Image (cartoon, rainbow, N blue to C red; front, top):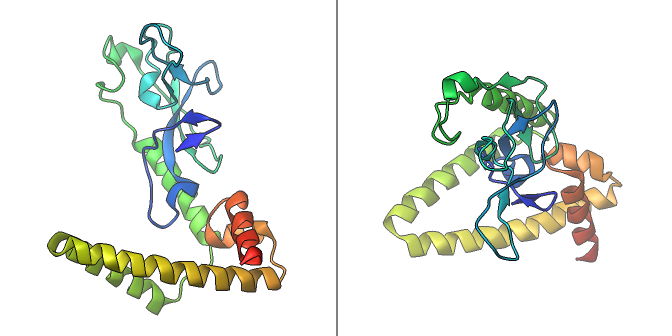
Length: 201
């Protein structure tokens, strides 16, 4: 998944919100977010880069992270900053160091709670049925993977039909992309695409 054209390796993801609210640990350098970290792999037209927090270790020409904070694919950034103790980290690469990420994770979970509170609640019977279907599919995948794939295909087709019908009803009701995005717990651009697709269908 990319953010602003840079490959982002997201640390956290939920089935409930998918990639619209994937979470990651962000870094701060000089009080702001640095650009991508590049890796020197010798000569060549492409230089690999990443924005994963563990790459900002000050090695070679990469910047060294001063603090961490939570970030989300929707653009949200956590207010709390968690300074890195480089005296304790020493010369270890960040990906090998024992860095405590519980603060950023808790902040991202709090952000998801706010998103969840604004989203349209699922009726209890439907929510329970979805949990049951997920369990049945997981069990079938372990025992009969081909049957699980067939079932997943059926669900995709059901979901596509319901998506068109429900999005069409929302479009006919004149709901804005912002209202749909909040109700779904997704981004405005994805909600707008959903509404436009329903109109085309």
